[in-house]
Structure formats: structure tokens, C-alpha cells
Length: 156
Length: 64
Image (cartoon, rainbow over all chains, first blue to last red; front, side, top):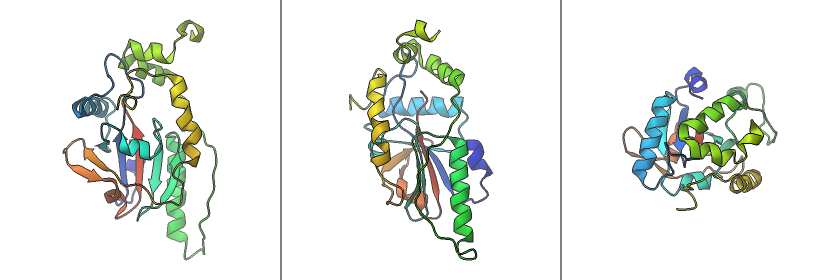
């Protein structure tokens, strides 16, 4: 997502990462019992993933995360003024970029080309990246691996 | 709080929110505002500040 938002020419666009709860807690990155737990894990994430976007910490009890649907890696696009323009159950960067560019292009051309907005829904695709996901589990710790793959022999 | 910051990932517990997501907070509705903490500065940021001057792209997630 950082690469996409870096490409945006419009500097009025705010792109942020809201740090919620640990989706796959393990021995190295445990569940949060204090805000300092959350801050420390968020800083580790910022450094490891070289995140350039602003990182905002949700409350310890996840008010914002729960308010927006509590999914582990969702993305939302909000229009100027606060109307929801896009909701994605997962963050598929290509889908977010496609949706964002289409929405902004229509906004720009709406008068000259007599465009009218309408509501639509669709399924989309994202890269699975199983190797990257497994590496993340291993980074979190052995417990994260066994929690996700309780029958590990079946997977191998 | 115990339930929200779970100590152990359980797949069966993760599925219901995926099933209810499409019926939760719709496109076209007003986005929700919450106070958040900027990781670098420690200052409080209200989510609604993000979309005052232009659109906002908001990703939720964690390290793990």
C-alpha cells in the first residue's frame, strides 16, 4: 500500500494504517494487555515493513476496529466530507488502487462528461502469498504457527 | 478486553465477522469517527480529520 499511496499525485489524500489487535499472536509478538504492548508491536511492524504511512493506534479495546467490522486486514476509502466510498474485506492493493483511481477520475470528470454515481458490489482478487504469510507466522513465534496449522502434518 | 485481544488464534472465531461484514456499515453511509493515537508523536488524531480536506484511504492491520 505504501508504494501505491506514494504514487498519488494528489497530496490532499490521507493514507493511514490503523494498528488493531494481533491477528496471530505468538511468543515474539504477544496479544496486547497494555497500550505499551501495542506501541511496541506497532514500532516493530513499522521498522520491519518500512511503513511510511502514518500509523494510528486504535484503543486497547479496539473501538475503531470493532466499529468498522473487526476484520484483520480491511481497507476503507472515505470521500472528502466523510461518505464511505469503498469497503474491502481484505486489502488487495490492486483493487484499492483501481477503485480509488476510478472514484477520483469520475469526480474530476463528473460535470464535463455528465457523470452520475451509482452503487455497486463485486468480489475481487488479491495475491495469496502463502510463503509470506507463513513467514509472518514464524516471525510471531511457534504458537502462531501451531494455532493456524493445528494439523501441520496435513499441510506438509 | 480479554476476548478482543485474544491470546490464541482460533479459526472458527474468525469466520463470523467475515459473514457479517457485507451487512455492516455500507458504502454511501457516513464514516465513523474515533480517537486514535499517532504512533510517532503520541498525539490524539480524530479519524474525521483525515477526510476534511480530501479523501482518505484507511487500512486496518497488525504485525502478525
